[in-house]
Amino acid sequence: MTTDNNIQQSPYLRSQRDFSTDDVQLLSIELDKSYIDIAYKVNDRIIGNFSENVSIVTGESWYFDGSNQEQSTIRRVYTFSGAGTIKHFLDFNFISGFTRIYGSFTDNENITLGNWYTLPYVDTVAVTNQVSVSITPTNIVITAGAGAPTIFGGIIVLEWLSNI
Image 1 (cartoon, rainbow, N blue to C red):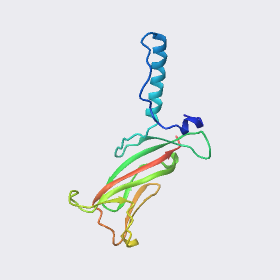
Image 2: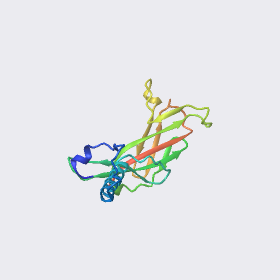
Image 3: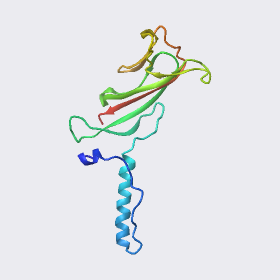
Image 4: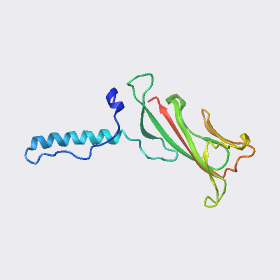
């Protein structure tokens, strides 16, 4: 996947092929093409695995500065209870930037009774009601404004560009 043509193609897989029933060699060629098409198209899709405290390849490919050099992203999920810091155990020597930092939290100890909010949480009424998320070289930092909803627990997802 290093040519401009491949970058522009979507991961669409055609739904029909002509498999020869008369010629074994033609059947073999078509089966080979079919397998290659399936492998490329499956690998072009974003991987939907999310695992707590385990780094997983997302399946995304990023290209910068017109280069054909692919950079992959890695994903890790963290759970938390309350505002404060969470150790992320990431080595910044192998990270060239974050592509996504997101999550959610609840304002009630009993999650079936509470409200859920996005992270970061932006209140349209007052800046002091917001909840921010930042990443330091050692921690995920969750900061709640003075009027922000109480944070009882939640999930944060980090996705970053890997140098390896």
